[in-house]
Image (cartoon, rainbow, N blue to C red; front, side):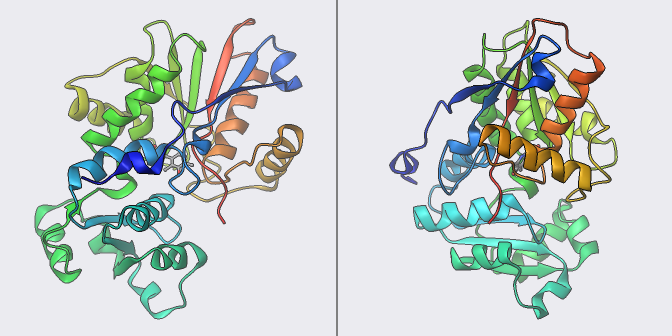
Length: 297
Ligand SMILES: *Cc1c(COP(=O)(O)O)cnc(C)c1O
């Protein structure tokens, strides 16, 4: 057993209404679903995705994958320290092995994660069985429990269904920032039939509808819930930003006293405000934005 209950997650996470003129003048209520408050170290949707996988790992070492600033790697490393589980992080970018660790990877290492760096072409092919086997062997993690990049697998998607269930009856539209789409896939499945989910991808490429659908098939055997994506708010791709986006995030923090994580949550809130301005939601609607994480450091 992993003793996850000893970590005392704050579940269901709190729902907070904020009063914001950009929504109010369109006749809209804005709620924040504070998943960033689930746990001080295992933050947000990463808790929901990792918890069932840590249980399934049943004390084995956990190996997973991520980029140099991956929230998922940090969450996995923190879980390893809190639960006394060995963790191995396979990191994209061989060249990083020869440099001082950036703050995100340094945190992973401080939490006891063993880091294994691979070149980008190997990293791209890590889902192929031969490549995966080779990487695990090289990382000394052949016996480990494998969690995919971003943590989105069948168990993770099922774990995120609770996020939707916690919001049942609370909002007409639930909006969330998407990386792999795993959280959206689960969330949408947990909502009531008259609620809809809106995903804001933070990566470029337009592949997320297919990926989210595939994750729902894997987790539930078919598509579930009423969900859609709006691909206009990625700001050029992962970790890309603009002065306007940054100013928006700072302003939102000042107005509402809520820390705005920049890679995902800032783009979500910006997109939601833009959609409200466009008249995308009917007057009288209640919107819930999922605050999936917290700024790092
Ligand atoms: C990982 C992460 C997401 C993306 O979750 P997916 O399930 O991969 O779509 C969103 N927000 C934050 C803050 C994250 O760390």
